Image (cartoon, rainbow, N blue to C red; front, side, top):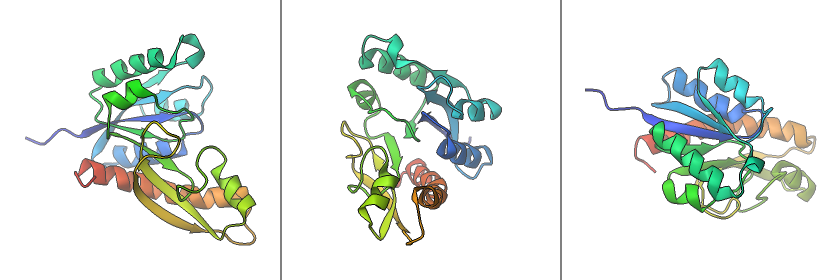
Length: 194
C-alpha cells in the first residue's frame, strides 16, 4: 500500500506566484504532496482564481468579520483539520500567525521571505535592499514563530544585485529563486529531512 501523500495548506494574500509554483509541482507529481486548501485573507486576491483553476478548495475570510485573531485562526484550524493538513506553507500571506495556529501546527508552518534574513524582515524587503545599496540579497525559507520573520532558518539562497537593478528587476530575480527553492524545501520536509 502506497503511503498517503503529505497534505499541504498554502496561505496567500496576493498574486500567488509561490502558490502557483508549489501547486504546479504537486499537480505534476514532482512534489510528493497534495495542496488540499488555499487560505486567503483578501477578497479580490488573484491567487484565488489560480486555486480554483486547479480545482483546489479556497477558504477565504475577512479578518474584520471576527472580533479577534484567535476567532478566525480557530476557524482556520478547523478547516485544516478537516482537510487533514500536515504542513502550512505561507506564500505571501501578509499577516503574523498567532498563538492559535502556532500551537496547532507547531514546527509545521514555514514561510518564504525575499531577503537573507535576518536582514530586511517584514514588508518591502526588496526595496529595502535596493535602498541600502547592498551587493547581495536573497531568499530565505524559515519556520514560523510568533515574531515577524524571526523563526529558525531552513534554507537560504543568495541573489546578486547589479548596479542596473531596480526593485522590479530584483523582484523578478528573487521570484525565480523562490519558485525553485520553496518546492525543494517542502520536499525536504515531506521526506523527513527537516
